[in-house]
Length: 374
Image (cartoon, rainbow, N blue to C red):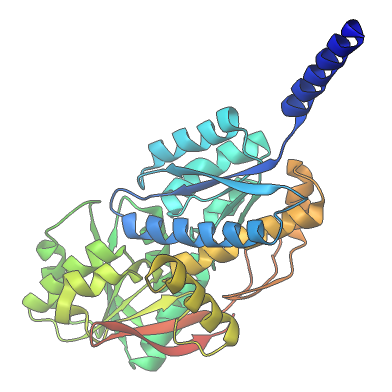
């Protein structure tokens, strides 16, 4: 009897060992966000959006009967750091997919790493066209710079009746350079003239040399395809130098810090964006309410895109019925999903086909102006 009892204990211990060793009660997803550095507000928003989506899935039972575990990593907005955290999440943590990076320069550094490892990657907010060119495991949930640049140029001509434009951009930022190029191509194709294009170094704080040249050229509008912190300084300095014309920008403007830093200098400026909190569609208003309740803040476009991106990834894993990389990739490519920013389907380059909105800075806040379809 004693031997039988001992045998039973040994058997039970062995069973516990093998079940713990083989049990995979979680699905690990990498969430890469720049929560420090010059794009820190972007990182906070995207981390929040991804977190909210994962929490909702877990509350509803998870995916494939397992809970989602987000493994967060801070890329600091730096490509080298981005490459390091991509590698760590893939090789050490063994995530099955990654939602990130957020900035184009980090996504461009991380995409080849994810592609080589055949780990599906979805960037919520990297708009540079080259990101998905890294390979067939790379997707995104935002529109691309060629579309955003066209929308901004078209609005400058039609909304502001501009005939001439000047551009100031960050020479060290692929996102900023790409937008400048796409704006120029469309603005000139529509009959406008870009009278000067000025580059500034990354992390600059004094833009007066470039802005003085711009003011001499007397443009009707100035296009600033840059992140909010640079935009705020540029806006203040160009107004101090006496420029009275219109300022036009991109989704990099979308931060509550923009109005705080720029003050009245940014008043009347418009920028292209992925969504507006003033959109009356129920899905938008429901999301805004949920986000505010969870994080005590209004969601910007970065938060929405990360929420959509995480939902797209988790929906794809569910449809794949597996955490195998190729199965997830194939499910991602076949996506047709209603999200906060619209119905998502993918083209042959794994870019979503979706609309853009025009937002105006008015009274220190963002005001919805119009929606532009592809």
